[in-house]
Length: 121
Image 1 (tube, rainbow, N blue to C red):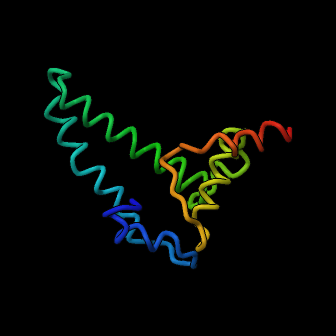
Image 2 (cartoon, helix red, strand yellow):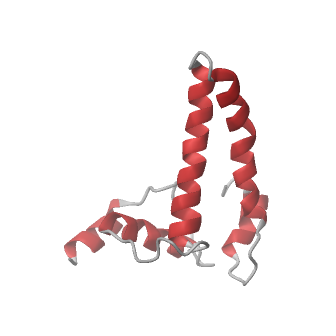
Protein backbone atom coordinates (compact mmCIF):
# COMPACT_ATOMS: atom_id res chain seq x y z
CA UNK A 1 0.00 0.00 0.00
CA UNK A 2 2.99 2.27 0.43
CA UNK A 3 4.43 1.09 -2.85
CA UNK A 4 2.64 0.99 -6.19
CA UNK A 5 -0.81 1.17 -4.52
CA UNK A 6 0.05 4.45 -2.79
CA UNK A 7 -2.30 6.24 -5.19
CA UNK A 8 -5.23 4.59 -3.36
CA UNK A 9 -3.70 4.67 0.13
CA UNK A 10 -2.24 8.19 0.40
CA UNK A 11 -5.50 9.92 1.31
CA UNK A 12 -5.67 7.66 4.37
CA UNK A 13 -2.68 9.58 5.76
CA UNK A 14 -4.61 12.86 5.60
CA UNK A 15 -6.64 13.32 8.76
CA UNK A 16 -9.88 15.11 8.02
CA UNK A 17 -13.54 14.52 8.87
CA UNK A 18 -14.32 12.50 5.73
CA UNK A 19 -15.94 9.13 6.32
CA UNK A 20 -14.95 7.60 2.98
CA UNK A 21 -11.45 7.38 1.54
CA UNK A 22 -9.96 5.89 -1.62
CA UNK A 23 -8.17 3.57 0.80
CA UNK A 24 -11.54 1.90 1.52
CA UNK A 25 -11.38 0.33 -1.94
CA UNK A 26 -8.94 -2.22 -0.51
CA UNK A 27 -11.91 -4.03 1.03
CA UNK A 28 -13.22 -4.64 -2.49
CA UNK A 29 -9.76 -5.46 -3.79
CA UNK A 30 -9.51 -8.24 -1.18
CA UNK A 31 -13.09 -9.40 -1.72
CA UNK A 32 -12.96 -9.68 -5.51
CA UNK A 33 -10.68 -12.72 -5.64
CA UNK A 34 -11.67 -14.10 -2.25
CA UNK A 35 -15.32 -14.92 -2.83
CA UNK A 36 -14.96 -16.71 -6.17
CA UNK A 37 -11.98 -18.68 -4.87
CA UNK A 38 -13.93 -19.82 -1.82
CA UNK A 39 -17.03 -20.58 -3.89
CA UNK A 40 -15.25 -22.63 -6.55
CA UNK A 41 -12.97 -24.37 -4.06
CA UNK A 42 -15.62 -25.17 -1.46
CA UNK A 43 -16.71 -28.50 -2.88
CA UNK A 44 -13.27 -30.13 -2.69
CA UNK A 45 -11.63 -27.84 -0.11
CA UNK A 46 -8.85 -27.55 -2.66
CA UNK A 47 -6.21 -24.85 -2.99
CA UNK A 48 -8.78 -22.33 -4.28
CA UNK A 49 -10.77 -22.56 -1.07
CA UNK A 50 -7.69 -22.06 1.10
CA UNK A 51 -6.36 -19.19 -1.01
CA UNK A 52 -9.72 -17.42 -0.84
CA UNK A 53 -9.99 -18.09 2.89
CA UNK A 54 -6.51 -16.66 3.47
CA UNK A 55 -7.36 -13.49 1.56
CA UNK A 56 -10.62 -13.21 3.52
CA UNK A 57 -8.83 -13.67 6.86
CA UNK A 58 -6.19 -11.07 5.98
CA UNK A 59 -8.81 -8.57 4.86
CA UNK A 60 -10.86 -9.18 8.01
CA UNK A 61 -7.79 -8.71 10.20
CA UNK A 62 -6.93 -5.48 8.37
CA UNK A 63 -10.44 -4.17 8.89
CA UNK A 64 -10.70 -5.15 12.56
CA UNK A 65 -7.24 -4.06 13.63
CA UNK A 66 -6.64 -1.08 11.38
CA UNK A 67 -10.05 0.50 10.86
CA UNK A 68 -11.87 -0.56 14.02
CA UNK A 69 -9.10 -0.72 16.64
CA UNK A 70 -6.48 1.82 15.54
CA UNK A 71 -8.56 4.47 13.80
CA UNK A 72 -11.80 3.83 15.76
CA UNK A 73 -13.95 4.13 12.65
CA UNK A 74 -16.39 1.87 14.47
CA UNK A 75 -16.13 2.55 18.19
CA UNK A 76 -16.53 -0.98 19.59
CA UNK A 77 -12.96 -1.74 20.67
CA UNK A 78 -11.88 1.60 22.08
CA UNK A 79 -11.46 0.34 25.67
CA UNK A 80 -9.73 -2.91 24.70
CA UNK A 81 -5.98 -2.82 25.12
CA UNK A 82 -2.94 -4.93 25.82
CA UNK A 83 0.77 -4.23 25.53
CA UNK A 84 1.23 -5.89 22.14
CA UNK A 85 -1.67 -3.96 20.60
CA UNK A 86 -0.60 -0.66 22.22
CA UNK A 87 2.86 -1.03 20.63
CA UNK A 88 1.36 -1.65 17.20
CA UNK A 89 -1.09 1.23 17.55
CA UNK A 90 1.72 3.58 18.60
CA UNK A 91 3.95 2.69 15.67
CA UNK A 92 1.08 2.82 13.20
CA UNK A 93 0.04 6.28 14.35
CA UNK A 94 3.67 7.44 14.20
CA UNK A 95 3.77 6.24 10.60
CA UNK A 96 0.96 8.70 9.85
CA UNK A 97 3.13 11.67 10.79
CA UNK A 98 4.10 13.71 7.76
CA UNK A 99 7.78 13.48 8.73
CA UNK A 100 7.78 9.68 9.08
CA UNK A 101 10.51 8.01 7.04
CA UNK A 102 9.52 4.41 7.72
CA UNK A 103 6.89 1.90 6.84
CA UNK A 104 6.07 -1.23 8.83
CA UNK A 105 4.13 -4.21 7.61
CA UNK A 106 0.77 -5.19 9.02
CA UNK A 107 1.23 -5.95 12.75
CA UNK A 108 5.02 -5.87 12.40
CA UNK A 109 6.90 -3.49 14.66
CA UNK A 110 10.62 -3.14 15.38
CA UNK A 111 11.65 -4.68 18.69
CA UNK A 112 12.76 -1.34 20.16
CA UNK A 113 9.10 -0.33 20.50
CA UNK A 114 8.28 -3.50 22.41
CA UNK A 115 11.14 -2.79 24.78
CA UNK A 116 9.76 0.67 25.51
CA UNK A 117 6.30 -0.72 26.32
CA UNK A 118 7.29 -3.79 28.28
CA UNK A 119 10.15 -2.23 30.28
CA UNK A 120 8.09 0.77 31.37
CA UNK A 121 5.39 -1.47 32.87
